[in-house]
Length: 325
Image (cartoon, rainbow, N blue to C red; front, side, top):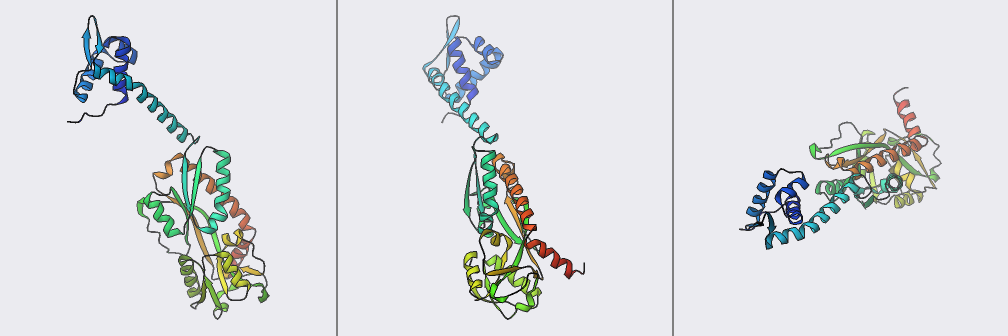
């Protein structure tokens, strides 16, 4: 039968008996009663399957097996102390890591500001990042390969999330989707009725973006004719600039890249994406993940404040006008 594992306390007792030559003195040094120390020694002998302590005159001495335990107790205690110090460093954010997945426009706008603030506040914390669209990012969270994911979903009423208890969603910001037109259109600033673009070719993005585009156009009474599809916002803007179509792009994408030669407009009906950080309920309590969530919330608040001064302001005016306010 293989021996049962011993804990660090058992090894400390054997070491103390070796150093003091007495079970009573070892017990006193470790804050134990003599009977408790003797009982623990008998348990150690049962665990290893051989005698550890034998009487020697008025005291005791360790057997050869006991000497092996005492000799290795120092290394075990050192490893335990180092482990506890490492855990303390992680708990106090002097060390540790946090793994993040994010979709491209968030990775270009929201995430850099959050990570920069995190580095200043917790320089020992090591963040890692992988680009992923929401479905893939959520799968990475569920599989435990990342600690949190920055995702988006349609803010239309009734949009289900289907997370159940395994995911915790932390709202970050609302990202208004705007229609991007060629500058050659000469369109004045202000909202655009999507129904007036029913006969134009469209440039669609990722599958989730395309689904939102189709749904928004359906509310305007038409199905968009998608001639081009690209996940690359720079490519989409280039296609619009060349007059090859129109596109519906999120505000974060326009904030991420220069867009001369095109105009961006809120739409009627409007479309908004909810940008969220998603993690596991227990993972959210990990100090490094909690600190990353705090940094993301702060970065999102700053970004939203800047956003309010551009596209979303017109978007709110359009919604107010549509509601008769």
